[in-house]
Image 1 (cartoon, rainbow, N blue to C red):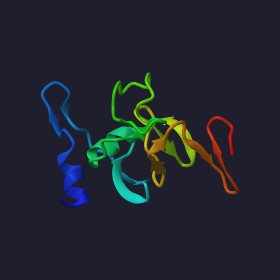
Image 2: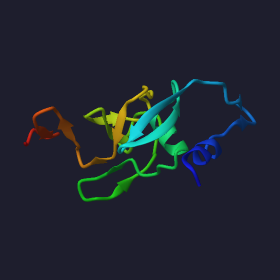
Image 3: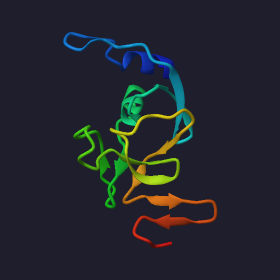
Length: 122
């Protein structure tokens, strides 16, 4: 199955209550280095689910976390976005060219010269 066919078939195009999916410009985000087509204005999580991604982060003990609340109240969807850990992907809109990575534990800040753990350790 190609990336485009996963994308096309993972979206609800016609909904009995909400109606048809409105038209939107396509943008490209990069999930762990791979290009993913997204709809302008949609949450990062929506684009990743449409692309077949199910696990968004891993706890400190290595347990996978998937979508849970979808409204920004829990932390199951937090990922590292453009080098910033802890971004709630269910309420953060995609931006063309953004880099998204699965987060492990509390994540790590990525800077040009160093990587710092979210708890202040280097």
